[in-house]
Image (cartoon, rainbow, N blue to C red; front, side, top):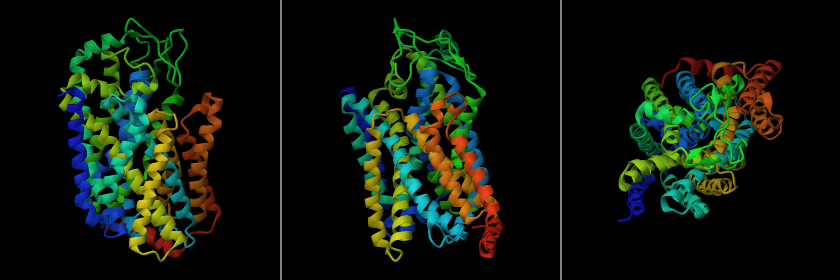
Length: 527
């Protein structure tokens, strides 16, 4: 039996299990929108923690982050991992419990736009509408990043890199099948399984890579000729055959199997701050915040926090290490930033028998599926529950809302496929854009909504709009100036949104007594 066939058998077995989970939950999850979109707040601590982290990290963890470490060394990858690890801990420590209680106090909200609308008693649903539109836009981009992962993974396994588009569509269709069948409970349960798969896969490749690359001494010896590659305060500069720095889709030069690098550069304080700013995004990530809302009891949050933070810390730094080990073991194999994101695939094939490699590579499949199912479900809930039922047809029955949700999921899938086929095949860069958009739109508002009772509806609207618009404007216009303006767009957009919410709140009338009462109740109540 051919190696590719055995690999596919390993991956196929995993896919069948995921579809079976969707079928198992199909009848229960399709009974009503609350069950479909939030699982009636029935997540246990392990499922809540693992599904939150799996849906958050995505294929970016096993492909995007190792790819950055492989191509330019430890600087950017390390500080990004630090920002995300710290952000995860703060989010679970500060936001989780308050959001769980407040979302139930505020009209039993089952989506993030629903919570914002109920929190500020927005009778005209303006805030809900804006939030739903932002989710549709940025989650469609986010879904596209996962479909890029499918294209690279399936193309590699099938040996069909020239059929990238077909592989993207195949992966998107597979995710849609089990998400459509089972809703939030299927998604969360499969994400729990996928979180375990991701963790096992990344640790296996890390351990085998460490051994095959010669341990600490062998890795250090193989990397020492690449200037600034292992320096967390520096960044390596790949160069082409003519000695020019490589950017975009340009190809790094290789001489006798040794990749060419320039002298490297300092990784500035501003660059480090940009990477650390990734952690701010957690406060606005609907796929994580929904898990907070869906936990069975607030008493379970501490256990979930420990599980989630340990998983996150180990996985992030293992991913960075894999990229470094990959460069030491296969130094001249991958010569563009996009191809560098397949280093995990190559190492898995190098270290394991074909059938075992298929199971390990299912870790990447798990990472992408666990995220794209969340993105598609949340985006469909934004369209069906928040826009359609909340704004267009307020008397819509459960059956009609469910059908709209299914159609919305299909629309999001199609848009995500278009993003994946648009030509930008860097998973890391696509994710960074969507992460910034969601983080700046929702992050500041979540914090102000939960912890400052003086926050007003006009301030919430202004803050959400200013954050989202600034991400696009900074990325597409201001950042082109370079220098200090090259900072990651999430940081200035997050700060602007915070300032706008604070100033506008002080300039507008105090919230009503009913809103203040709900706020005080959410501070002390336990569910």
